Image 1 (spheres, helix red, strand yellow):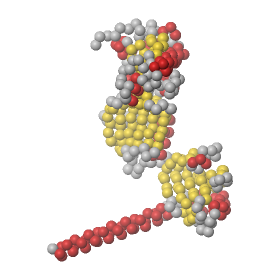
Image 2 (cartoon, helix red, strand yellow):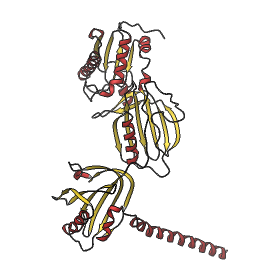
Image 3 (cartoon, one colour):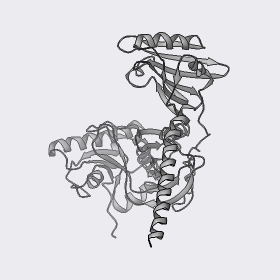
Image 4 (tube, one colour):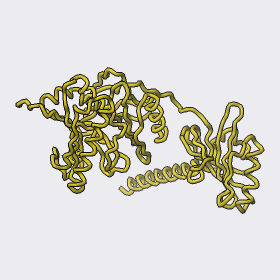
Length: 422
């Protein structure tokens, strides 16, 4: 038994020694690998004046040069491409001025030009390089004693081509349970994960508002695995930003931290599509076809005598219509044009936040804003009346965000209609 125990101890000790050595090698190797990361050709001259180290590299990014307050000036440059960032050791240069006396001439004598310098408070230079088909931008700064800081973006296209189709006037067939959206697909190399209908409402954020607004009652979510070689947040955001914009979508909001969230709206070709893209470990694309939800406006009005219209959006606490409202207002306009004898009451409704008088005034002003839009597009004023109901006719629970969003609405009603018995 002692022999067995001793053997196990020897084996365990051997394994521990192996793990320790492997960890030590890894610890030693990583900085060496970083140091050995090759410099772009336009920066190889730096080895003549010092020693670059702890080089970090991104295959592709979008970056304001320089970053921070210095870049938020008339001289800041938004760049896209390969990104290197690293300090350089300049032995013997103990002051910022001494570092600057070495590093600035080195750039200017090796094909770089100074675009702008910040001598007051901060010593820094925005430099540009363009030679033999290579273009690069760099921020150069002196730092701690014997150190300078280099930040460079070598201009390059995205590592893949990505385009999206423009949604057509005739709605395309979308399978809620399989496949991609016909006009909003995944990035190259991504793998399909799942697809499912989502019966929860689709909300969008209005600038300056604390609560989100309801624009559609449901959506479809398609989920994807990221490419095996990884996908940075910046690359994801810019690839979809550019492709959506080129296909005619309007980007409403973008946020990027640990996650990326993009909200977009398509209003051309008579369509009314809302999209939300969310990336973390995987990424999902969620689309709500709001135009499809109101395609039976005439039948719904005939059956119920009034219809709640969502997606008529106003500036926060105001009666100013937002441009995103146009597709829904256009459907009301089409309804009136197809039924020339139809007269409508345009109703404004609010949630219960705020006083009675305030909500009453706001609801009336918003109803009048819709009437003004319709008359401005050719509808006779005699066919329309505007009426505000304030918070007196809720259709959902005002104690929840979802209920309040449902209560904040515009309705159209036919005063001459008698609702059909159900």
